[in-house]
Amino acid sequence: MALAPDSRITSLDAVPADTTYLFTVRDDEGDRREAVLVRTEDGVRGWLNYCRHLLDVRLDKGDGAPMRDGELVCANHGAYFEADTGYCTFGPCDGATLEAVDTTVDDGDVYLTDEDYTFVESGPMDDGDDGPSNTSNVEF
Ligand code: FES
Image (cartoon, rainbow, N blue to C red; front, side, top):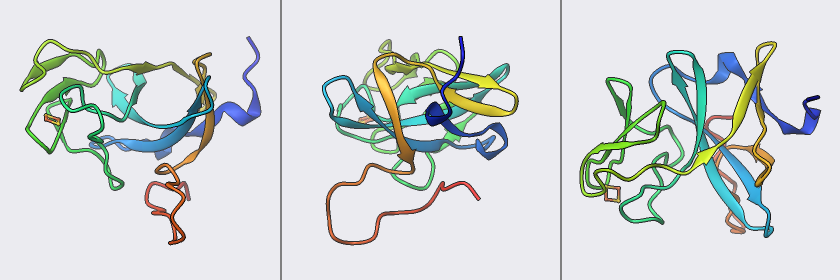
């Protein structure tokens, strides 16, 4: 399958080892959602950036989600999610699983390959405010 240039999220090198890389996608109904890339032992995984306890709570609030021993941590009530499976191992949503966003790595770049989403941009969702958007996580 050829990878469309506009589905490139970032370079693999830009995905940090100890936190998340935040980006914005559009779902098939046209709504914007936030997603994160996270390092795993064999590459990267993509997950929607929302806790499974309170579904509007973002794991990465703009400057990277906290991680402990290879697990994503929700800062709100301390849920832990395995980086490679999205499975919640501890916390109020114990047993739930993050919503996956399919990605692939090709020649040092990470691409969005999930047919339910299209890539919009790196960084947080533009909420329509007039103020400048948070530019953390922008590739440089
Ligand atoms: S909102 Fe994430 S653990 Fe409660």
